[in-house]
Image (tube, rainbow, N blue to C red; front, side, top):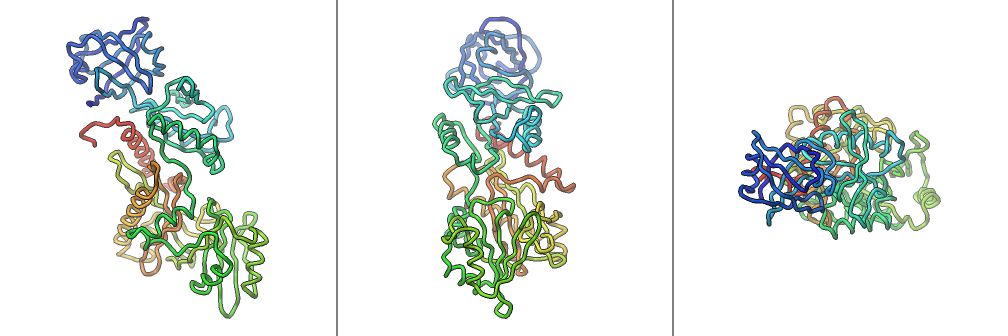
Length: 457
């Protein structure tokens, strides 16, 4: 297989003809050939080759070819020279999402990010966004959202994509029977689909606890704990986190503390503020939790509390935004340090936390050794990503880790998110990393769709 970059043009001739410049003929090994099979997505059309004398690599599609294949626009594209005189145009990248739609924001709050992806991706590919409702499985086509030069969306019907980047916004939709069927349909057609779905906290802890290289970075965690296990964990660790296995944004998390002299305390988020309750006995604490979440405590994890490094007596943790690159390797693309708000259970920005660079946070705690501590944390993040990928049965191309560092410099993993938020990239010092994140997504799409030059692989 060879791969080349060329300029694609349209002509109005109704015939099934392609006009190919001499340089492109040579690059695609088509010299002397009379016909070629063009492929776009899953569509395949035979065409007559007509060489033209024009400097550079140029391909002209007659309207008879263009209309049969639903090629959406002209411009710079890749061509893959496959077996049996077949040339594939592309890649065709699909970004799957949904949301409370309006005419200007068809993907809700994710519309801005999706526009950024489409704007950058259109320079190297045919990239469009779509919802589950936009797929016609019978015809194997999609009514996709393409981005115009003026930044607005236009709808065009195109073949099923060569690769799907999954940014469905909610756990409810991601785990619904309809979306499970959608994923399986893509896989049956051998169309790479990443990221598969949101992670479940307890599943990730179970995956990593017994993984020799990664297990040391996981705090002790018990899924669906018994009352006895809750008490034993509290007495042994002095404080624990009690959180839903399918939660996000810090919702539903309790910080439970035990002091032999003062009793039991529960700190949590309540109506936009931070609440703190004191209990004279463990049984009264449990009555409160069971009254809110059921006697069996199902769907929750109790996790060892870690004494994190602090600034102004407020704990600090770190969001590591990880990507697979164009060579299918895990890399750290962006890191944000999150300082908890006063009295907050978590460091989430929406719950009163503040964002800073990791260098700022670590230098306050480790001085001249901050760079060394950060490099170690990056190494741990890559180890964790590799371990999850090894144990996970589906394609993963992006992970957001919430990592903590304690006073002894030990790194701990609290959360792993398959569809991490992008709030850290709003920090002025992380905007370059935000652009790099988009580029890594697109490069991984090129890798999965096999549209990468040999020297890049």
